[in-house]
Amino acid sequence: MTKKPEAGKKKTTRNTQDADQRFEYLFNNPLIGIGLYTVPDKRWIKVNDALCNLMGYSREEVMDLTWVDLTHPDDIDNNAQLFDAAVTGTGPNSYSLGKRFIRKDGSILHTTINAQSVHEADGTPKYNVLFIQDSTEQKRAELEILALKKKTTGTGTVGRPTATGPGAGVRQYRNLGAAAR
Image (tube, rainbow, N blue to C red; front, side, top):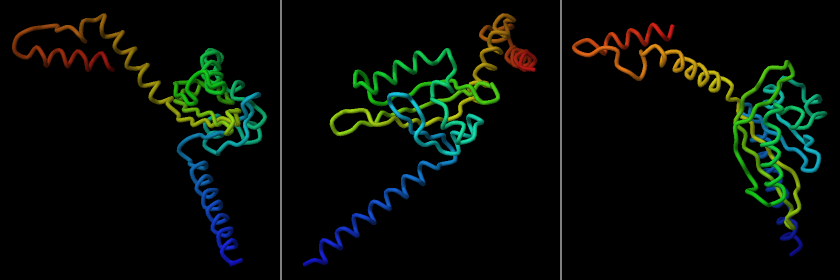
């Protein structure tokens, strides 16, 4: 009968090891930045290589910073309100938003973040998990489209027909193509 508890202990140990391996595999995903940070002081506990690469810092440098240190100044208040609501339980314990970070080289990193507050069984905040996806290229494309719309709306080539009759659509497309260059 002593073998059953021992077998159960081995199975529990193996399950824990499997869970740890799955966590490490997911955490070290090279496609998305992931970080764990403390609740009271917003210091990083653990970060993956993707997060460091996105920010342009070494792991050691990131670990010496808070997420506030990395956040664009105009985004701090909004992010802090969501963070506080998630931690205190006055709002949802997870949230998503578009957020800007400042890279080490001073350039702006546009991201979509998903944050989750993890609590102890008694409700005490334990740590937060942050998933960061680079959306800089999408943001750049959005801004280019917006600029193109502003530029072409004033010329009458987008949003308003410029001619009627046979072939009018062809001329309109030609005008749009010229405006895009």
